[in-house]
Image (cartoon, rainbow, N blue to C red; front, side, top):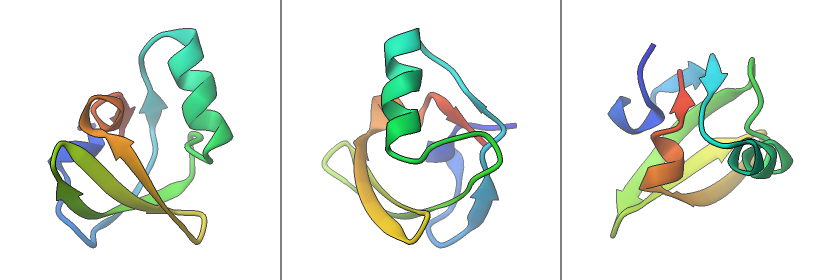
Amino acid sequence: MMPLTMTRAGEVNEIKRIGGKEEVRKFLETLGFVVGSRVSVVAENHGNVIVNIKDSRIAISQEMANKIMV
């Protein structure tokens, strides 16, 4: 298991665990980041990570991406 930020761009991974405080986990869940979902990093820029999840592109902070374990 490793944080989402450690994966290569374009590589499809499955979310294994989401860490952090309860409110952070709930926020990520509302965006579609749930255990078992497929996620891939599109790009990283200026401290943000752009990811593909459930046919959507979402930008999240690098700090949040570090809480998503794949």
